[in-house]
Length: 508
Length: 87
Image 1 (spheres, each protein chain N blue to C red):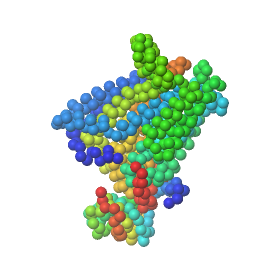
Image 2: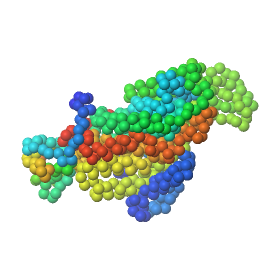
Image 3: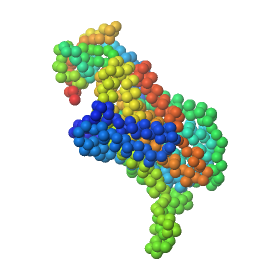
Image 4: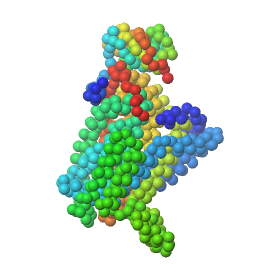
């Protein structure tokens, strides 16, 4: 948790126009994202990268004094550990999901949905529950958003579920897990920064998460009925031969069990990847070259001789000289996230500029001094302040770390105990990271979705969901924010320090 | 604390103005000072600790409530112990 203390030693950057001007790079990016995805309907992540780059350049012209300090802050931001954590989740989940996919898992799911009579209208609600379970098990909402969009989303669309609603249900499940999982980054940051033990935080969190989830489930049932369309003619998908793809539930089970037993997410997903590759080859679900292929020129003697070798030769595919490439699920699963990874590094840099330039402090001091004059108003400010910062910063763990000290200061001023503070902080962090079109979880899912038209002939461009259109359908996210606004007003779940002192942090 | 107690803790509507009785012993943060006394604000209720050290603002303390007016939500107490110094 060294990120929390980094700011103490670094120099501040001063801006023309005062501390709020340090928000210019992020504010510029948000306006760009709204115009690009919301108004013009262009869901191009590399376009957002261009927006953030221009924002960082524009911000520089407002710096007072040497620009080198600004550049140093940009570097500091890009090397923040939270960005690396998100990148790891995307790359590993991307490889894993794609490898299961070439092994026919989606076909298996369609077959299972058919066999269990889960129709298009019930599918979103069931998807929400399963995504919530997976995310709670593996602790990464981003990984869940990727895996479910790559695997469950096409199955639901094939059955005739509404794509926007289905994507919203997947993101809702990711929110639930991000909020509740003991191994989730956001859960750990919320507990550590508010001096509360992780077990106690998770236990005290159920009373909010389950209320919101119950409402969200019912909402997906109702909306699923109202919005269901016609099944898509997806050829042999879901036929009797498809059932074997469900064997990959074993690979997913391995990831969940390894993660729950306390192993690092890199290790857990790597084991899942290895087992899915073994299952693919041994059961004939996919050839080795479907997972990793060196598509080398057939005019190269060396390539042709390697191709003829046993074992190694299975990974070499001779092609015409102009078409050489590396391919396969491991390649495409990771490559799909490259624009998003660059975007995230730049956004974390923009957030760092806002933090060191005092923009956050200016906003939060105003809230602290002027708005939070009673315990109800203080808690409402904590909910809305966390939501606001998370709505601005794509990576929700980074946003959470930025606002955590203020939640702590504000909560302690009214003797609100560590559990309650950690819950307000984490719930609104988790929720807002998956709602707006520039949210990290939403972009991760969308990146996975963009590859579906290449993978399925029947999946047309028209079935892609515009990232700017899904926000009303992330029901669990909205209900979670709603539950906390209601809790701040009514005192539901409120605990003061004299009521119960939070325990020591036993595991970081 | 058992798991059930952890799950059930806080499962109620807690008032914004908690009340206390004389003789209650509490753990709380010292939230401020009014010049002559330390203030311990719990929600919108306030307990004053007269004659205590101003450097204790932000410290975690143990205090005993000496009197509490349930109509104004203000009371007086005495410092029993300092559990954690201010940061």
